Every structure is written in C-alpha cells, then in structure tokens.
Image (cartoon, rainbow, N blue to C red; front, side):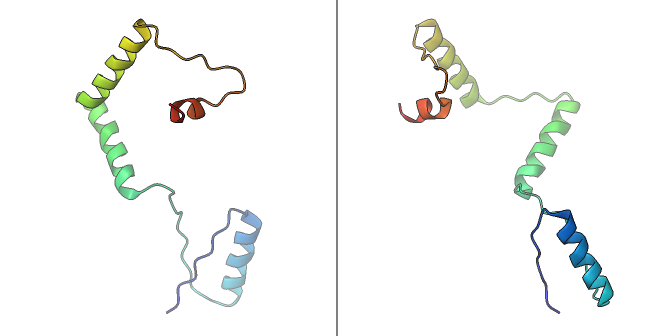
Length: 94
C-alpha cells in the first residue's frame, strides 16, 4: 500500500482529487491535520478541565515576573511605544 499526502487549503482542488479517486475506485481516508503539537493540545484541554473543576493554578515564576513588572512600573521604568513601532522590536532590542 502507498500513502499519498495532499496538502491544500483550496476546496476546489480537494473536491477534484476526491472525485478523481472515487472515479478510479481508489479507497481513501480524510484527516484534518492540526498545526498544534498533540501534547500541547492535551495540556490545554486538561487546563480547561481543571478550571471547570475549580482547581487553582499557581506558577511561582509567573507571579514573580508580574510582581517585578509592577515594581518597574512603580519605579517609573517604562517605555513609550510610538505609533508605527513594533512592540517585539522594543523587547528584543534591550
């Protein structure tokens, strides 16, 4: 058996290929390919379930980062983002 992987977002092409395979009586199966890592998806789903069940989420590193950011703002350590500037360029340049 040979596997043929066809990557297209064009519905017309997909329909034409399916019809061609049907006309030639070639069996095929169709699967949606997720752009996300299955392990990542599993963690997100578990997180949603945890929230629904009322479980608390606490990450000490994240809390420390937020507290440090608040301290910097209170100390006046801020940067003004001017029109047309890219936020990520400011972050990566420092």
